[in-house]
Length: 227
Image 1 (cartoon, rainbow, N blue to C red):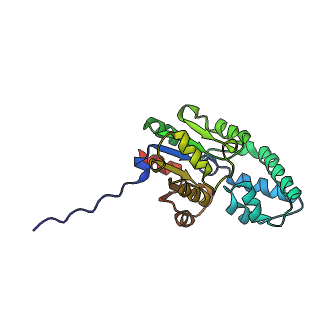
Image 2: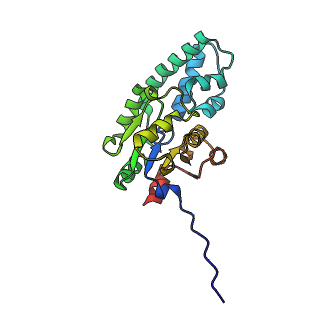
Image 3: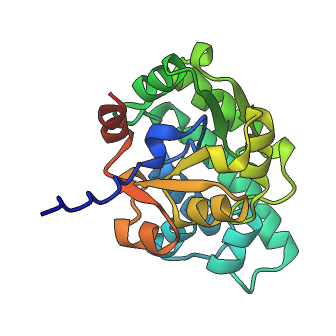
């Protein structure tokens, strides 16, 4: 009797990618809830408000789209006041930024595997500089995107499209790692496989529904998988 043909093994895209496009806030750096606090304070400065849960659900979106969701009736002057207030309050909170477990190790491991490593963020340069200082990992990073590189942030694909170009690798050979549903959606629109982490506070079910190929508790788990 012939032996049954074994089922083909599923290959995790994390194990086969040639380039990794890494979100930073909530993925490598524990900053999402600092952003929530900064937005809340900015809203109150502008004599308006929104529940923390609503703000958190919009973290990772383009700032204009975030305001469309949490204060849809605000006029242009109020929106500008809120945007500038968020930047100021987040700057005040920046000393509280901490790395997430495994953040530096992931960058090192990916670099040592010979893959391209791109930080794919649409944060302003000032915020990116703070993130880079916290990571202290320039030697393992091949390229970075910032707000200056994109016209619209997630869920539009610009961030990941630019990151793919800077990686110098075909989109289908890249994996995007992020913590928000907006990361998953933006990656798909850029033709990139996405992998989710739960450290930004988004439920794994939401990440899967948004298109994640796999979801992990955090990047430390990904380091262990790659090892």
